[in-house]
Figure 1 (cartoon, rainbow, N blue to C red):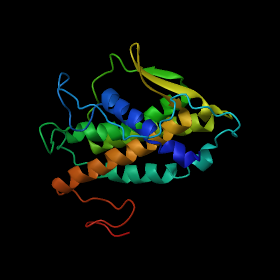
Figure 2 (tube, rainbow, N blue to C red; figure 1 turned 60 degrees about the vertical axis):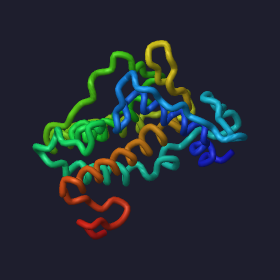
Figure 3 (tube, rainbow, N blue to C red; figure 1 turned 135 degrees about the vertical axis):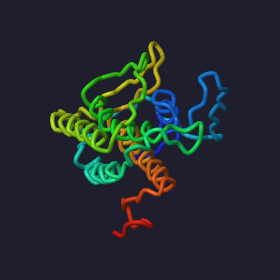
Figure 4 (cartoon, rainbow, N blue to C red; figure 1 turned 180 degrees about the vertical axis):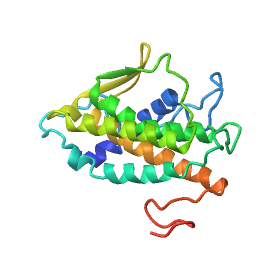
Length: 222
């Protein structure tokens, strides 16, 4: 199976996406005791073992796998620069995160990437409350610090490091267990793009100019 096939395998994306929701909280937060609809899988759907083998394959090269990283980080910083001070507690719906919580989460995602690269596992039990951005300046300082950690982790990654298995657990319960190369794509890059887009939706509702990312917006030409 090609790398793209592995990354977009239904079983892997489904498991990691659900684990991200449980570990970091969905944007539309439900009470802890709310009933969740179980995920269903279409008949014959393929799954990928969480401990996918890398036997017979050359070590993954970060510069090739994540050549879009710099572009996505630069675009994210431009979006965070537009954070409107004084609107931290605004939310579009009572079940949604506040603007400050969402922006703080976006700023922290590169730090998660650094953790994935530098460690073998992370226990999310007893995790602190989600940080909320105070001002645009504080938000950018946190983002820049996390980006620096991510770049340093990538720079010191040894050959084959991306093929090592990384685990996220909640106490004794394993939430995610996959090669780091997969999790860097799903839990870092795709995760970042997902929440950055939500932040743009918040901005639009607040009449904050939305910057160009992949193309022009109603506020900014390419």
